[in-house]
Length: 149
Length: 422
Image (cartoon, rainbow over all chains, first blue to last red):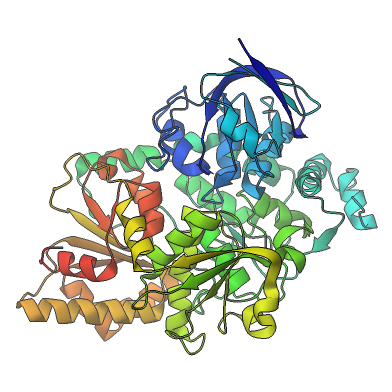
């Protein structure tokens, strides 16, 4: 087993451990969550046909890793709804600075629901190229992220 | 964050606990991006992205109830994205049952929007900046809008200032009357980090060019050169072109502002001084656009299926575009000796604009030719799994991105709906 620790900025603080699910391209929140929210899929299976890394993979409870989110400005409310329905990722980890839509979703979930998603950004390109889907991720509230495989 | 006395009073709960929570959310949002202050909204109207009464989105409507019941209403009136449904759309019995179940909250949500402050019963469109709708910000106005295509249009074409706000936060800003000062609200945030050189052999398809740029620059600001040979000014045709271009940059990427050399207001004023030091360059030629289109996934069960439905108007069409499509369809049908379109076709535009068009000669002609003129959001229609499983074609890259609709360039789509092969 090997482990590496990366340091980022805690946007929403929290401690959590979960399995990694990695999107190397931008994460389109609406396209990804559309079907699972609409059709009652509790696993949060990704419905974004344009994302080969995630398409048809369950997102609920995973450490969702991406450069940033893209697409519709419903993005934040989609994450908020996912949190209200307990279908949210365990945490959101960004290699770049977080974008405005993902930040809105993470903050709405933190302020208005009981299902907070610890969120860390600025983890760097090296983090994104190192981490793989299936790795064990541990997030600490100081923004450090441990990757184990 | 430094707050004014009024902002601090709200934050401390002097106008109620719910409003305090709204302010807390906006402050956290701003602090994430290093905002040091909140600035007053100066645009007359807001614009919300959430227009649909989707039964499974009950957390949103519960939140709206919390706001309404506590008297935490919008301080400005607002427009909102298109409704999901209306009478006259093509649908069979099963599709109709699905729609009724899916959008069972629509009437309730419409009532909530009235209580919160919607401009009018007709203010449902993603193109609220059309003259017939009347939500047209002034250059420099500070906005609290969402809807990615509207935000990028307001920033780029109108020169207003608005971040890519999420749904819910759009309304939160309108409630407290201020937004955190960061990103696209600042001069620095409006500078470009990409120089995009368009070197195509002819005027590129707006939604294909926007897609290629969005996928490349993600949320950065592009400064685009080479388009002024196709447009001499920001006239109605140019505005319609860049409306569609911007929608594609925002849905295929996360662009909130673009500058077009010699055309958009800030590019005209400041030229290439808008480029940040160390900017990157991306050249777009015919090969880049061909590759971009070739890489679009097709998720139809049968790739060779005959199209059952076509959508034109995502984002909603302008008056000039409605006129142009009417003429093109008429000419194409005439050249083939046909009287009606061969593929059911729905064209969408803002309610006030479309109703005016329907009453005119070209609108009447289109309807006789079998085209359905509508105000809905095509994306909401396609969300019905019974509709999403149909072979639907579109010239909208935004619709392609979020649904199973298959993208074709406008000329190809025109030929297909008028009975020709691609």
